[in-house]
Image 1 (cartoon, helix red, strand yellow):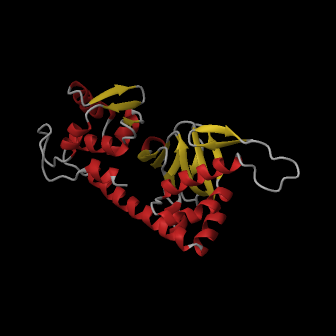
Image 2 (cartoon, rainbow, N blue to C red; image 1 turned 120 degrees about the vertical axis):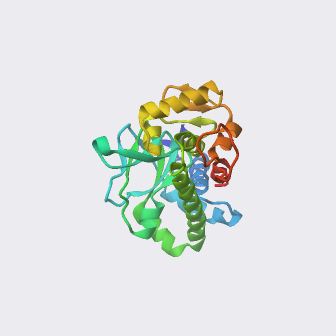
Length: 269
């Protein structure tokens, strides 16, 4: 049996017949998943190690094909999803009205808010690529939340981060010019110097047409701030994009103003 750890599958060694203890090789694998989940959910404190054993027992490794649903609109998620590898899209609407509002990549989680609040999400969460993920099933998650104050505090930290992130995202799409909106969204969606989404998805996220977005991206590329690649954008000059993202006026290139420092806020998570 294979168990996913990080973005690589690791084969679990069989237990020795008659041995009631967990195989020594199994323990690092399950606890590696648990530590990964704690970080994704917002854990920072040393005492949060207390939830590791619970997570090690209850997390399930899942593989999702392109187009497979993690959560459907108007339905309760099957649990808390924690992405280990690949990209999932959070979208509203269907068909021509479908609009991607966020992407989920390695180390990011979905499902805590609707499960804790009891309010079902209007969003459709779907695998945009092959996705490796950990699932904390809803029944086990809610039962553990009721009896574990350490877990509740961990989730509160993570939810506070998500509130800040949602406000930064709102400011990104309310900027006064398309150039500024693109710079802000690139910084918000950046993972390890790369924005791993297509131009069509990025245009949907900022409420722009694909041709208009492409013109701005070509300008950024000529300025050596980015490099356009297939279904991804390499960020070459984060400082230049950060300066532009602060602008609240019509585009005077890289002018500093009173706009939010999106890059700093995003990296504080």
